[in-house]
Length: 114
Image 1 (cartoon, rainbow, N blue to C red):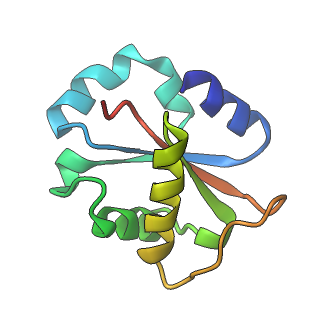
Image 2 (cartoon, helix red, strand yellow):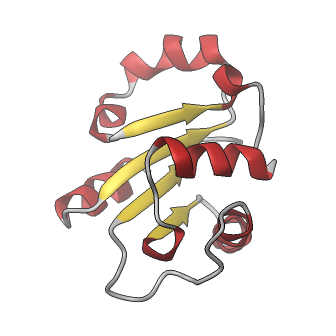
């Protein structure tokens, strides 16, 4: 995930994190992983009282970071989960269009949920 985040940022795309970590786990471990400083923001399940795949956590992420689902892609460490979660992100928003190639302006990456 660190290289993916660095590559996306190098392309000029904003990158946000979404994790199912507990609030105290994130606060304790985040300083150990400097690449997390590259993120433009993070939604931590433990702070929200929700966990993926609850559509509400995607809605909150979309709203908090002003994401346009038509220009945002979700990355997980497993392609099948990325596809499933991109679908959930779309369902959690009012926009039902899929991100268009060349039109991606923002990304959300899953941070070590397993």
